[in-house]
Length: 298
Image (cartoon, rainbow, N blue to C red):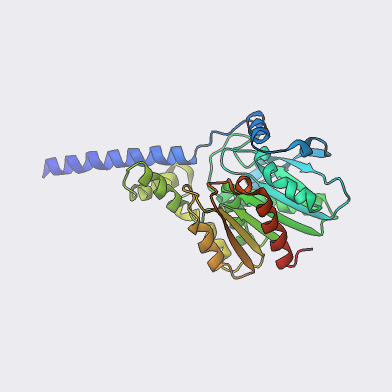
């Protein structure tokens, strides 16, 4: 019996050690610099339009006083329409520019920013939409106060930024629409896919979730943007790469199914994770324009 107890103790200790390592790995951020992200965007798309536009940099106090570095890219024409674009994991404000040109062409001022722990913000861990959504709520409120001419305000996010955009709906923000590109409905399923790819037991995600709770104060089970759609009142457009093997397309399809307000879901053929806009730039623009029209957004 003693040997059995010792074996169980050793196995439990090993499992907990793995759990804490997985929690640390999944919630730590190794952000790109602004220069790295800018170079990547220049190599993968045309952002030459960005440099000729008027820009204003400022900071906004997010959740628990965390400072977010923000930039307004002003439309060359006078407009009362604004959109806030949230980038993906490890990226920064330059990662939002791949979507910004659509809105500039549709007559919007564009607000881009570095998510918590990203860009030139203070280092921090990722809570996969929990604190990030509260930061976004603060940015939405700041935008309406800072720019009193706002008539239409939308939010657009990619991957982590998309999940953050969906999660913030639980707080009933004063916005007119949401565009979510390859969001996750819950982070647990995403991590299970990763574990499966590494030929590790998927059940260990629950041990890691407990360890994340102990180390960071948040469990994976709390990171569920889909729950924020229960009584949503804002039109939502979901776009997802049909070949996304990281965040599988069913995440967007499920959220579209449960969304009680007007919503659309479009799977982009041949597109992998966060690559729909590159797979067919023109079609992406059509999706956006038709959604805004169908949702009654002027």
